[in-house]
Length: 318
Ligand SMILES: [Fe+2]
View 1 (cartoon, rainbow, N blue to C red):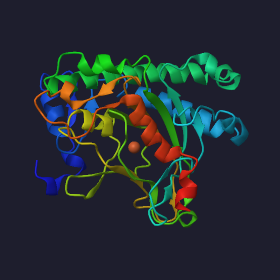
View 2: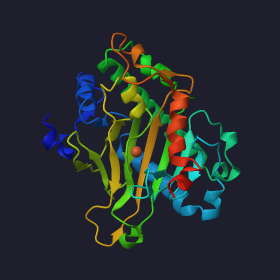
View 3: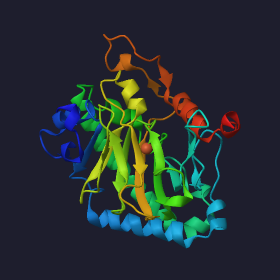
View 4: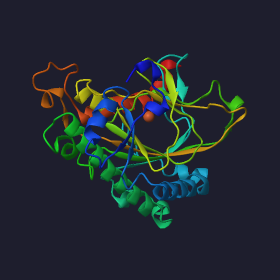
């Protein structure tokens, strides 16, 4: 695949039931790090419509106070509700950005008792848990294809992820509608790579704006394709695979909008193994020198999350 011409039309769509699926995944994940997938219960219009309805009921139906009461957790971990501006990227005043999005996060292994009555009584908690389980099943299928593509011991990645517990996070995102002059530039969520292993992204509407960076550094727009799920490689898997697989830089851009940026909804499942999992490329490729020192999944995630949510971070860059 020539780098210079990679656009949305070159992002492959992989049917997970095809005998060529793992070979296609390898081609995609070693070049752009991203692919559309079909053949999964999560990748249907009916499922997407249900998740959108739930997301709207939460983000639009709950008051700001009710949502703020769902902001809980411990430093270094994401739990519950985060309002616009909670996540920050950039090391200098010039590159510093807050992301204008609100999110609701459920981490695998959280019990329903940890959530306030409000979310349980509204029925939302049951729906979210159901969606989380469907997303975790899809993640297991993609991880199994990835093992096959990398010629790993069957079950190596899927088993280590232990998706019923571990650190995987199910997230609903809502980008509120806003006037362009409310915000400097045209970025709704700045350039970044995710820090889990794989990220499953379901675009819940046609608001658009998602862009990924191809290997030549050019930004390419990705539209929603009916009955597909986008899955991209994140940093922990790039590190684990000794950079055979490419973590995909991406952002959300306000493209082709004159004044109003329409609201936008997405669902993401960030797959990550339990904290005590050792991320060491020698376990995958024993004969190759490590490009990164081994690290536990827990320490790695904590480091990365502290960069984004750390309380001293805003003060540090003034
Ligand atoms: Fe991301």
